[in-house]
Length: 256
Image (cartoon, rainbow, N blue to C red; front, side, top):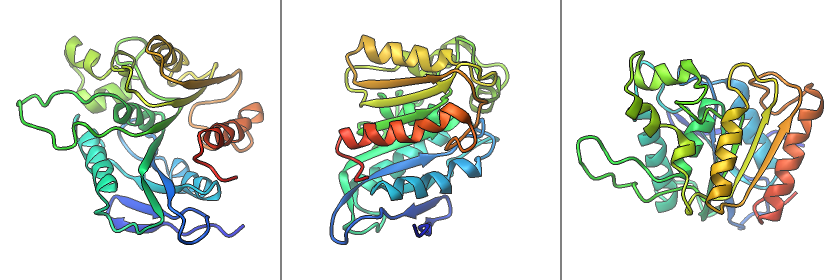
């Protein structure tokens, strides 16, 4: 298979077109690499976009703002990109189905993907957010950072809010507390022995999805370190991409 070439459309955005028949509009997934809101893990960017392309899904890899920038810089930029995709103003062409836009995030990128799934916080200064009503239509969360109050990932928490954040600010960014009935269908996976971001993050988020009647799939693999990406050489967790592809096919997003 020919590996697709990412096409830069902005300093922080690379577009990878779906491997699909010409003239057919295909869904798009926003790829959000992890990195503790400090950097962007390369293996969770372009290789993931190439995998999605092979499924017949367009991919847009976003290198969102990280430290020293604080919250809400990352989610504001991500919502701007999402709104631009919806509006068709990024010049992505007719091969993108703007009615089907999802997000796939790893670790800290999973936290950002969950933010794009849930209702936005009101701006602290009371100003209107033009993208406030924009959510993704589907989400894939890989070993995500979710909670800032229960077994938080200290690195992500301090990168977003600083070292002495208030309890209310931490609760506001805890995505298990942001889920509602409008949160989109979500695929979640984690490993039980993850010592960086505990599996409780995925369990709590999945519990919130269940409580609100949101369709979801949850896969917890017994073994595997944090940051496995596509899972190559990782034993049983290599199955996550096949499981996710099947889930995407069931929802009419993937071709293969």
